[in-house]
Image 1: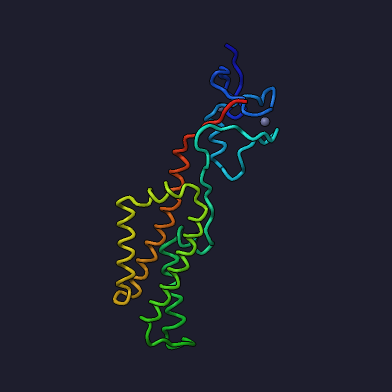
Image 2: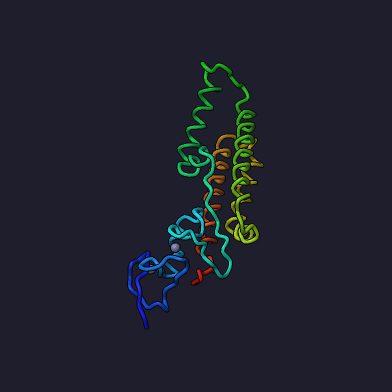
Length: 204
Ligand SMILES: [Zn+2]
Ligand SMILES: [Zn+2]
């Protein structure tokens, strides 16, 4: 039984446990399947070929891994600092339209809030559908969305939007917070899909 070194983790192993997935020779010839998989899933967008000899790796099983596209900067702020962004928007709106010094003074701030939330929510859904467009395994993705907790989240969101005329800014802030959770859910689902991938690399 011969042994060789894995080009990624540099551990010596028997050649039975190692792959030679590309045309590289010598110390770069062998690699563990798991090491190659870690390398690939760390950044799936860089492609599925050897950095040195540029050979495309042969695979067995499903291999379309999901790429994690970054959303719009406004959405990133909402996602990572939801309370800050919600309170800031609220404060700016009040200063702009609802103080005695405001250039445009809106007596009907309620109507204004509702219009603002409608535009805001449409923008968010436009962004979210943009991200969903890039999902490769749409069937699996949709199936993972429809779990009890996530359906509850969508019910809560619909309820908040439906009661917006009565609840105005409090309801609007709650609805915005739910939308932040949608984005987190989106990325959680994609990460789960990527983790559960079932393909393996093959030797040449
Ligand atoms: Zn290794
Ligand atoms: Zn190579």
